[in-house]
Image (cartoon, rainbow, N blue to C red; front, side, top):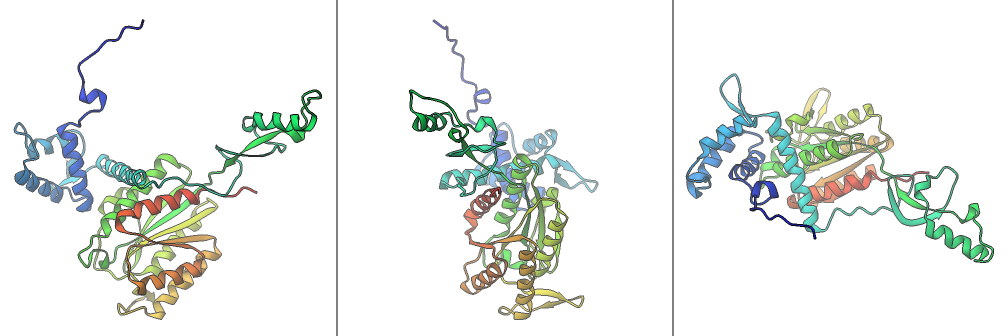
Length: 366
């Protein structure tokens, strides 16, 4: 009989109730997501919550929590004495964003990504096919192989021939280069709805997924407003809406230029936007029109979508507004590019984007 030794339950050792620091740190990260990485504002909010709801215990306060954040390397003071988050905190925000998206996938039942494509890959499928020269021996389906030989010769005259061998089909994961475009025009915070926080969180989550799991894939972030510019991974938590119009044409141009430099064969653009294109550059000057869909501006965007299609770049648009007038523009863009469009809610933006990303990594191997 194997003896058992019983010990007192240890929350830290056995993953029980999180410590007070972990609970506060989780709340602090939530604040940082809403303040675009502004540590001072997030700590002010946390202090107000503590004063109203007494979220810290009697032995310590927010001041002690701030000291511990600094000692653990999550906060620092710059040359001006201002409190800022560190690279360690930026990574933790990406981790948290990724965990939130996957938690939503599990709740909604999403995350299963069946594909009709088959080829040489890492994941064996239940379906089988006849053996071909060069097939990996570990893919051999012994049961089907023996069944084929018995059907051909019977038990009394049993033998194995080449035509008896059957192997498992497999999924083929392909490398992918992705540019994620994020609309930073002023409409992303208008009408009493915060649209930039889910977009920013989704960008951090997708980036962290690729860095962790798909090291051969590439991810680039392009922000667009009056113009378009690249955003580095470390700057993702700080993305903020500006007093911008929506230069979708410039954003697609910048994304296409980035993908042209990438060596991966499979290239795609994910565009998160809530509004219509309202400006573009014309002979070095910014032409603007916020009233309706200006055909001069729209046609420039559609022309760029066609160029992307010719270069094999698929545009997937995640429309986070429900105006039928604007959805009509998205349909035109999708038709011009032969791409895809999702009319997503802010609560499930990450679910749609993740599902589409993983599905696009599957390809047919001829």
